[in-house]
Image 1 (tube, rainbow, N blue to C red):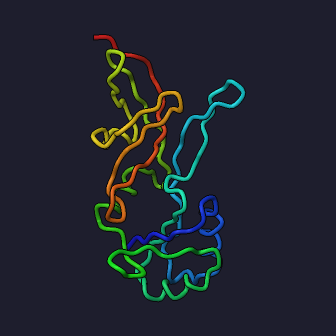
Image 2 (cartoon, rainbow, N blue to C red; image 1 turned 135 degrees about the vertical axis):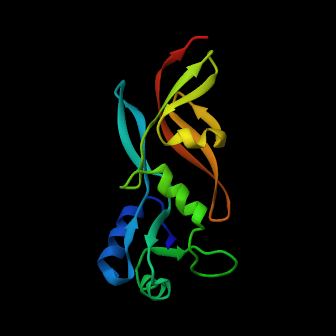
Length: 172
């Protein structure tokens, strides 16, 4: 099962590495920080960069949650293991896990979605992870080359930013 661990923003990778070093491998199948690709402008040039998809969070996959929870309590920098309904440690729902798995690749990286403007305003997703979540798009910022999608995550609505790349306009 997949669990979410909250940590300090900007410390996700460092905390994931610390967990992998300090917690016995028998308790963890995988420990990772989902990333997103996006385009960013440096010195007048667009460059592809990688950023944390869920700032302040990392994910741990385990079949031994009780033992893992005890081990995680000893890891410094750990804010808390997220749970619902007053519980300290709770797995993601199957739908939430499928979303995180589906929006990313094998390395848990969400690649750029290629989009096209139709008739000047409407956005059409040509390819990429956003294709399955067009109905969840709440905002597109072409200047920043990103789209904001609203999804259910840890039992509440959450807005995530994903990178987009323009591939030209369609005429009708």
